[in-house]
Length: 112
Image (cartoon, rainbow, N blue to C red; front, top):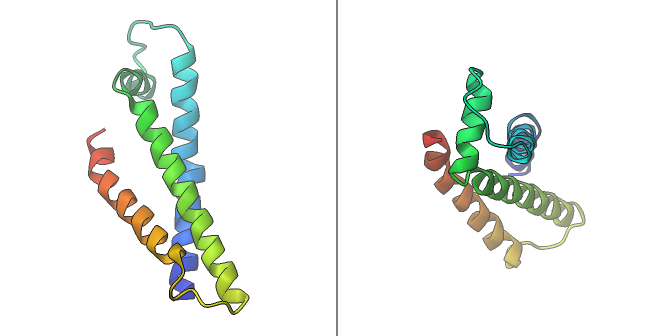
């Protein structure tokens, strides 16, 4: 149980730092610029198209969900390390809820 949660925490943090956060920063940077014609750079053009499709809101939501998920895992691990019972704690329901949201947005993310 603990090793699987640690693996999931590690994978989530890696996705946040290597994918979600850089994408969020790039979209915010592109949003700050004035609209311009296609650049020929496929990444820059894709980021501009995200801007027009509320992509920033989606990326911000995913970023927030993933950070929340990681925080909840860390809190769960802390409680377990302190020997506290988590069986009836609302934390478990919240972890499942956030994980469900993350799974539900995966198909949306693939379409973008």
